[in-house]
Image (cartoon, rainbow, N blue to C red; front, top):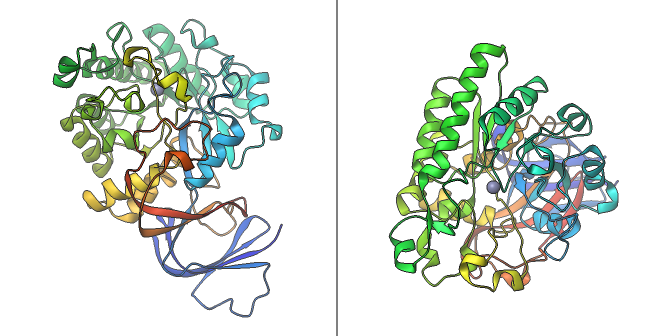
Length: 434
Ligand SMILES: [Zn+2]
């Protein structure tokens, strides 16, 4: 493995409160040294990268992606999805289990994580919380944890029944792992294809209420309280892709009360509203749906005040022929790996004044902490050389046609982005170069 010297970079490591000009040396796939610019001038290394004007940060971590393999490889594969991740600056991604078949067993988890899948970046997975994600019987958490599970989820669906969710939280707590909940009371959202509100009314579509999201979260928080009181356990609820002010208010209070609740927000929910659906654009259809402006602003406020722990993309590729159908029949989801950083910097950093280091923390140290990853999400000496080098001032437009994902379903084709990934390094190897 060849050594690599990155010179004169603005190094930002939120874990170490580091923000300044440095040279960084990579040896044997690990961060070997960080010194003042010019320290290594005479050093013989295989490659030197001049990073003048660029930010060097820990590689981004996305704890919520759909890679569609096994079973739906016309949409995406582990190989193509992780190449899109590398292009977006990500060095670790966590695959959701709603593959075909559902990833609910050790053999399927091992198959997914095998080197033969040829991932470009580090791949982790959350297997299903219940067998087949049917919400009836728990999968084997202990065996799955031993095989590398970083949490459990039925994403795409909620764990709807309270006794099952309670059992899931208890079993996962014994292993120190989170239950990652897709919070949607599906008894309230049948036949709904977007957010409830004036836009849905004008379009003649049934809308999902904010309560369909918040009521499940309130129920789960109540379960945490009850389990802590009776079981001497500290269960961890992670709420996926929170999209409403009402849900965020419930999470904020639960955190203040000391319960172990974490949550993530997706770039589309802090960038767009349901107005993006005015012309029935199925590339803006996802679940949870784009919401009202008040909800969008509430997501941003919660990102600013720390209620939201991390940014996650919910990268959800679908083929063009699947999206090019009547709005109500189109599948939910958009791609997101290559637009996350550009949107976060544009919307959160530029438009809402979030410090650059905080944006990076939301995409590195914080998601790493949510799933208890050691040894990544930081630039500490000796840690894995997972890095992203980006130009923080670059203004550019995303091109869906140029995406490395197999699918091009994004509402951000030609959308303005701030900050462009130049090089992504995973385990000391360059896995993407612009
Ligand atoms: Zn989901």
